[in-house]
Length: 307
Length: 307
Image: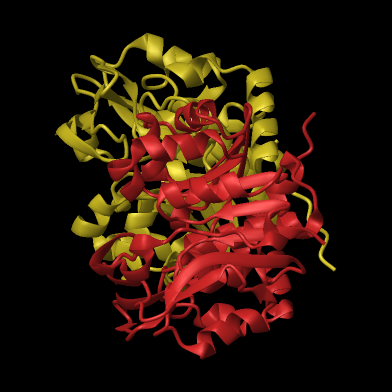
């Protein structure tokens, strides 16, 4: 079984969408990645930090799904990272209402001894300095996958570029790819980003799917068109968790297998948005996941015989 | 060989994009549809109108591609329909700078005797009264495909709904689908539009691909990610022309075959946007079309073995 190391926030979120609002609920990139990856038979551990205000019940949700929490620091007297946001009517954009870094402000990640030899390292969206520190602590991973966002491009570009230079796969959204590369065409943007280091570039387009670029090859996975998108929070992280979970489970990091990983990631992300926060991911069963994979096949597969 | 009747404008366009601008060049929905459908071995005829200012050279371009022009009325002393537009930097939106209906204002379509028994009727974007008149003239077509736009929803909704009730397939873009149905979710929008008449709904999402809906089934064709989009004019019509051209050529209007038709339409549309106006469509050769179809396959096809 492959070992998967996940780095990312474990947090409280408060979310408003046109369909309703929540109080502080379980959130964070690390949480979504871990829950999504736990759909696969993998040995995963998370490196993150919370305060001692973080409920045992949430920790149990993760350990119940075989997520190793040895690398999750619990700061005595500290408060857990909190994010609050409001989605606009089209669900494609949101305003951040509040961000309280709390224990995250001083976080110095320590990779547990058992995870120093991880096969796959998933660097969820976090300060690039934290991501760099984790890269320095692991030994010869087969694959390092980076997720990041425009916030770090605006505030820590030099450091972020150091991280980008050291990873195999980067996942970012279309606007961020354009910002990072200075190119409008996503084909050109992906090429420029590959020149910065990663062999594989995944460009997430939200409801418009995701593109995987490698050398001069491209692969595209649509997002499943849904009756209702309830809350987009965590969809990108769920995608990333499904992507690395599938790769870790199959122990195959070839481009061909990454196509499947992109499909699995898209499939899991399609569930995430159907309920508030992590709710849907916590109740998912294998049958419904497999059934929807069949919908993905029906959605995209065709047979044309070229003369 | 199937007979394909095309109704749509044959026009002059003047186009501005961030890459340059043109004088009056060959344009019009009917023109793009006919050029695209002519990639297939079909017997196609066009019903439209021009003034006697329309150059013989342009007419020859169509007849050279076996497009029957018997139904193209040439109004003595009349001026051809003229449209001028300017695309914004992202190429996803445009301003109309000028529209001169000219001979189109009084157009009363006459379907040539040989095309009254057409197998497939493609109603390109035009006044719904013209589309209705053509539907009334043809006898028992196997398939009627309608393309329309928000302009007619704003100005002639009742008449447009009469047309929609009589067609088998409707192709519109995502914003128009939302406007017509009052639903934001495209899944719900397609269902409501099917309730208005058409068994098949194609929702065009420009650079984000196209969705085909039928009963509770969906199929998705991505747009091929391109290095450069030079001029989006005519892409939707080229898509429609490829769609009906393929169906007419294969004489199979099943949902399974429509999936292929959507792929062929997307493939041809990907060429259309690479040069100004009809330029690229006029120089296309079969090898390059087939090669790009292979790119479409590589872009979307994957193999997952579900347990």
